Amino acid sequence: MNKTLSLLWCLTFSSLMFAQKFDGLAQTPPMGWNSWNTFATEINEQLVKDIADAFIKYGLKDVGYEYIILDDGWMAKERDKSGNLIADPEKFPNGMKELADYIHGKGLKFGLYNCAGSQTCAGYPGSRGYEYQDAKLYASWGIDYLKYDWCNTEKLNAEGAYITMRNALFNTGKPIVFSICEWGDNQPWNWAKNVGHLWRVTGDIINCWDCEVGHGTWSSWGVWKIINMRKDIRKVSGPGHWNDFDMMEVGNGMTDAEDRSHFAMWCMLASPLIMGNDLRKASEETIKTLSNKEVIAVNQDKLGIQGLRFTNANGFEIWVKPLDNDEWAMTFINMTDLPKELNFNWKNHEIGDNQNNKRLETHKKVYKIRDLFNHKNLGDTTNNLKAKIGVHDVLMVKLSK
Image (cartoon, rainbow, N blue to C red; front, side, top):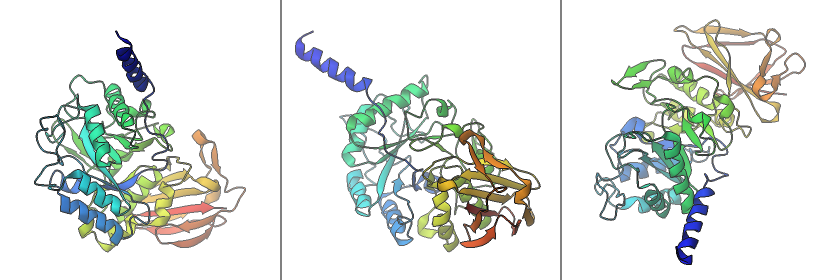
């Protein structure tokens, strides 16, 4: 081997040895919008531009939403002669670079989808064998976020496949958030902290409260099926590495109360807040829920602690989440089919998070209570917390000293 080849080999080997994910990204759960839940592969250039405009119109950018992510179906069915992916010329006649420029011009960020297998879940070209080529192309287009799926991955090792794409993205030098989407089948919470910035923990969500919809070899899951599916994984979630409970179904056909509870729980779980509705047709109540700054602040809290279930007794789910500055968030969700009266005596409950050594010391200290959805103060913990909570609705409060 001559000196030139030896030097090239050493440089290549070194770059692979020290490849990593981009640090400093997703220090709070990413917030944005994804096309799949509502549109599947029926996407196009004008739709994406309209969604970007809606971010501005409804103030969604101002409350923290920043990523617009195109899911499966954005590419042509075949690669070009050089092996490069091509944006579908009918759906995206001006190409991805122009679309990325439009989104960036709004002060937003742009994300794309691909898959670790030979084909995507909808049958478009996957990245298997093209990881470095595809990553370089995404960087040239100015892509800020990559969702990477797990269809058609016969005999691939999940951790190895995702490390390969992580390394390919890092090799471009362009910071790109890496979203791992292998549905939790290979327990990514055990290995993905240094690979991706977020990882799906379940299969696909569907717009129902607590159902399972079978599709033969796989199922879609309702909100509470997803919440209850995984145990003991909250310890791995934190700044730069999040458990992803999937895109939200807020505004996609559940009741307004169920939407509020769904949104509250994604905030309590420190899940990425990725909208999945048609923002062009969103109701006033949907926008009100999605843009609630006080609720979003719970999700974006800098401690990055995933909440935990305190109790599910007497028809209520009660969840708690430690926040920065010794504050706490609590949700009281009516799981029944009738309105229920809440009468919560702080003196009768010892609330804590053993994993993070946090205690809500209502026996020693007085905490003010703030209703986050209704933006009003509810007194303090010297008195019982009383409220009437509607069917599948939520009381979400913040406690501060």
